[in-house]
Amino acid sequence: MRIAVVGATGMVGEIMLKVLAERNFPVTELIPVASEKSVGKEIEFKGTKYKVVGLQTAVDMKADIALFSAGGETSLVWAPKFAEAGTTVIDNSSAWRMDPTKKLVVPEINASELTKEDKIIANPNCSTIQMVLALAPLHKKYNVKRVIVSTYQSITGTGVKAVQQFENECAGVEGDMVYKYKINRNCIPQCDSFEDNGYTKEEMKLVNETKKILGDDSIKLTATAVRVPVVGGHSEAVNVEFSNNFDVNEVRTILHNTDGITVQDNLDTFTYPMPRYAEGKNDVFVGRIRRDESQANTLNMWIVADNLRKGAATNTIQIAEYLIASKLV
Ligand SMILES: NC(=O)c1ccc[n+]([C@@H]2O[C@H](COP(=O)([O-])OP(=O)(O)OC[C@H]3O[C@@H](n4cnc5c(N)ncnc54)[C@H](OP(=O)(O)O)[C@@H]3O)[C@@H](O)[C@H]2O)c1
Image (cartoon, rainbow, N blue to C red):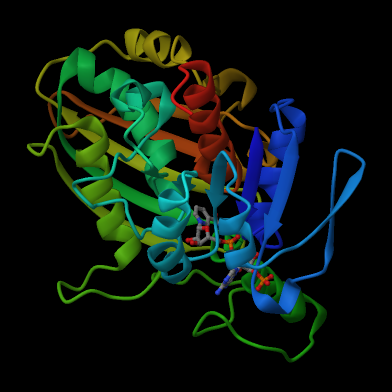
């Protein structure tokens, strides 16, 4: 497979290269792509050095698959050009996620919807992926009625410039600010920009993408997304009301038996998911699984994942693996 990685010099792009190598993805030629300022830079992949190329050069090279993580604007303009050249695009930005003609895929849940005709495939938002992976098997069994989610999101979710801001603050150095406020020793209740309804884009992504992936518009969701001074991954406090009653131990078993989920839930040993320990791992970690005693058929859980891995690079590469295994590319 000839694989283009668009945004190869960014936070997600760098992890994509790592995950491709770790999973022994069948790359015969790597085409690293970034903005004009990075063209000519060298990127190392599995011991070989590759030169970064620009977008048009990459289109002309007609890769089999292009893994995009270079922002929504780049995807809107360039994904169709790659697709027209015969390259299947898997896109990490929000550009195509809610387009009714594009599939929004978490492989463990809905990869079977993919066909040869899908030339631009959308990867969901990082905070959606980790939540929906836990919700999907529970929805099947108990039917999700309503979800209330509060997120505690890593600064790595905002890219290299945000990590730089955080490091500057820690070192007492003045530098460019990506967030409106200092992030060190702070919580910022704004992830992405605000929409007219008073919610942020990140909050509305959780609402809209979850319904699309689970294929159920009747699910009610509401979200509060908060940026915290953490680097290892996103955490989420998720409150779920089901139509049907459940047994907490059965919930644990269902989650334990779900591909891509590791249950970490033992109060005797103080075992629960934390971003420091999720960092660098591909799984979604679920713990603090307990009944909401204030309302019938309602569950609380705490979900953590490395947003650069399952929230972005790993999920994208799993989609690519599915395409290859199913001979769709
Ligand atoms: N971080 C996350 O947790 C996460 C999770 C899911 C999805 N995403 C999405 O993934 C994308 C990248 O995020 P990131 O965190 O990796 O950001 P980042 O660290 O800022 O990296 C951005 C990458 O895009 C490239 N790029 C920017 N403008 C470009 C242009 N006009 N043409 C070609 N390449 C361009 C950059 O190249 P240069 O180095 O040359 O500027 C860099 O490689 C975004 O769409 C983001 O929403 C991020």
